[in-house]
Length: 519
Image (cartoon, rainbow, N blue to C red):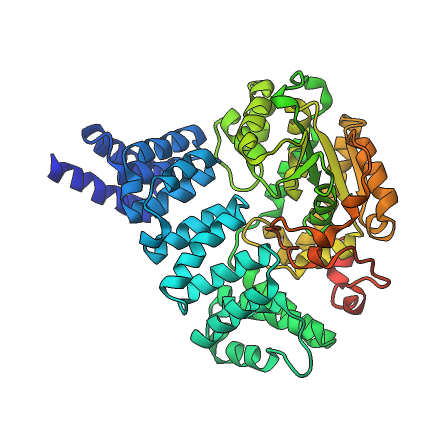
């Protein structure tokens, strides 16, 4: 039996390496027929089912792997934790973590793995405790220093984050990630900057690996922009975007088909009755990335009846479960088609969303969910959560897109590394928002970023009235906030409310001609 299982396992891994998912599944299922509780096979099958788009089967395998004892093996545990996060099984993940020995008895790779998953759930203080143990075990280990700097940044401890990064660069002077993170935390000056070093790293092979080139070039762009050398900063940004774009898959025609499918949805398909959810009112803050959603959430979180929870994929998790489809990103055409077929239980989606949210919340009756790309889910949100408020951040298109262009995201925004693709995406987004307004009149409030920064109190009074709240002056004290901010705006938002007299993109107008034309 053991030899037979070993054969299935070997064959499954060969199929997995070739991305032959159906064959890999057959081999793993044959192995599990003989050993139903084999944790490694269950985890591998969970990944395979995800690749095949089978959300519920993938989730079931991950939960079975947890029950089979995968958490007892450090290497398997480092696979199990991100699997549980993929399915938004936060409480199960916490139970696994709490069952482990105390942090001081864990190895550094496991400490980092746990901290990473906790940080993804925006539990920065808890992640910080595991990172402190990793630092105590080895204060010069570059991955720990990078992770610690990231969490310290989210917590607003910028001096500490800079110290971690400077130590990391001293220990690993060729590590591109360290330079990029450090560039986001400080303003370069003629007396203190990384320009020469970054150019040197790019010149001696740093551009041969696209991921490394992107990190170095984005850092170089930021430093040159700080120094006011906009021509050289444009060249660095162009290299950064080309490097990143070469590493990701993006099909603008596929995006067009998705937006067309969403635009075919209307408000006539009915919706759930308001879900009790303990009397909670979700406030969704949506829009393009870099449109000011983090600022609006931070301001709202100053209200005594609002709990700010950050960027969440919780609603997407519910839609994936309801349609039994695993997708990349917030939504895809398969989810839209299955939802439009009438097979979705919208009340179950709303109840599932609120139920999974409860562990995050305190006594406040409202909470914010500020994943910007939830603008794609508005038609589904309106059906599943009739009591939800939807705030749509609106910002100058060129300023929004330029801010996207100069931000190194994960693979979540693949449209943002080419000026024309970005401009076309923005036009699609604006058309879809116009459709949602027409399909669900009165459910969405547009919030202008310029008005929010120039007249914050007046704008917040409109926002709070729309959300059924009274304006509170404490909402404006944004610099006094201590809650973690795990977004690309983690540094900027702690600088307070800043209204620019001149748009950031103005010195780059010539460089941005393709973007402006596409818009």
